[in-house]
Every structure is written in structure tokens, then in C-alpha cells.
Image (cartoon, rainbow, N blue to C red; front, top):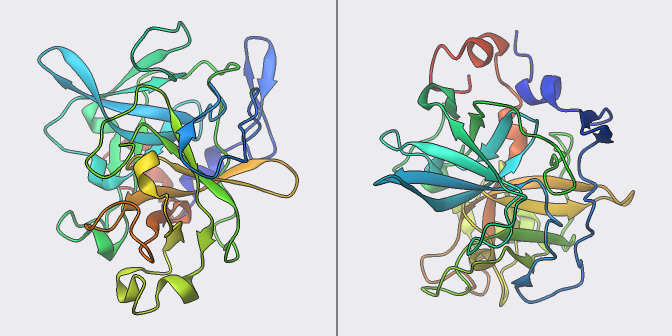
Amino acid sequence: SHAGLISSLLPIHGAFPGAGVSYGCGVPTYSPHARVVNGDDAVPYSWPWQISLQYERDGAFYHTCGGTLITPIWVMTAAHCISASRTYEVVLGEYDMSKAEGSEQRIPVNPGDIFVHPGWNSGCVSCGDDIALLKLSRSAELSDTVQLGCLPPPDEVLPNGYPCYISGWGRLYTGGPLPAKLQQAFLPVVDYAHCSQPDWWGSTVKTTMVCAGGDIKAGCNGDSGGPLNCQAPDGIWYVHGVTSFVSSRGCNTLQKPTVFTRDGLILPCSHTPCASHSNQSLS
């Protein structure tokens, strides 16, 4: 039977204790400025489920992708961020990468605890399934700066124009510099009917993906693997997607919105391999 890994682990309505306080998901201690239209520095720690995925080179670790903390031990990112030959660690509670702020938690990821979606084909990003789960080698300590992202119901599809925000340490513009401080940008959802039109993404985009943006601001302000943050009417933020790809013509190309993997793809996870880590896939 297929028991959903995430549905069984994620406290949609529950809460994890942390330092004597119960932290649920999707309710940041520090509210984001949800009015910034152009990309801008985020309010510090206002996306507390945002992580930095870093790889080791010559004894130091370097940021390569974003990701989302979805339980105290599981991180969701993009499959294309993962290289089998690299050693990774996850940095939680990060805001300004240029200095130590005291809020950071650096947690190694064991190579056997990285699960790339079995349908992922690195030679075909647009084929979909660009999603992976990483199990942390120890639990994150939840706090005002490190909290869990909520996942929406797997069948929830947001309407065209729904306001969402991308976050990450991605380039400020095509070919531009990497920022030290976490960035955010307003990206309204582009529904499948629009995004799949021939002069938009056409057949490149699938129903397993979410499009957002397609105007002057796009995935440059985020990162591969990072979250698409969308606030529900009740005020709770949900992560509706994992940043997957942008146009080769640039990250803010008209009618080429940023494309995200729907995180519902991680739900059909057979419990046994996930629990026993007997293979490198999610199925």
C-alpha cells in the first residue's frame, strides 16, 4: 500500500514542541512584507522554513539551492539540485550569508538519506518529477527563526492570478550577482490553461507543475529547489511548489513564468523504502 510519507509525517493541524513553545507550520513569528512587488530583501526570518542547501568543496560549504523544511527531519528540494558525488549539509535559520547571526543550524545530510523522485530524468527537466527529499542527520530545533512549511492538500490547484511569493538567495537578475540576504519576489500564479498556451510554455509545462510570474520579476529572486509561498485565506502560508526551471532566455522573460514542481508529487511514497532507506528513490 502507498502511505504518504508527508501526510504521515506532516503536522498540518498538530504542532511540534520546541523550546517550551509549540510551533505549527506556515505561521512565521516574523511576518513577511507581503506587498513587495519587485524583488527585495525579505524581512529577516519571515520565511522560517526556507533552507540553504550547501555542498562541500575543499573543506568549505557553498550554497547551491534552496529548499523547504517540512518536518523537523525532512527537507524538500529539487531533484536537479542533487549530485550523487557531492556531500551536502542543510543550513536552517539563515538570513544574511555574509555573516554569522547566531540563528543558524548547520545539519549534515548522510548520502544514503537523499531520495530523488524515481521519475526524475536529469536529461529532461521539463519531463517533470523534479523533486527530492533529504533526511537530516539530526532533528532541527524549531524556534522563532526555524519553523516548518505547510504542504497544501495534494489536489489543491490555485486559481489564475493567486498571489504567491518566491524566496531564496538566487541571482538578482539574469547573470547577476548572488545576494547575501534572503530575497523574495511577488509571483502571481499562472494557471495551466494559460501557461500551456503555445506562446507561453506550451507542452513543456505539465499538470504536475505550477507556473507563477511571467512578467518583469521571476525566479531570479528565488533559487532552484526553493519554495513557492502562498497564503491561504485563514492567514496560514503554504508551500505550493519547488522551484524547477525558468526560460533559457532569462529568468524574467515575458510569458515564460517560473515553473515549479507541485509538491503533491511526494505524497505517493511507499512507507517501507522511505523508512528503511533501502534505495535512493521515493517510491
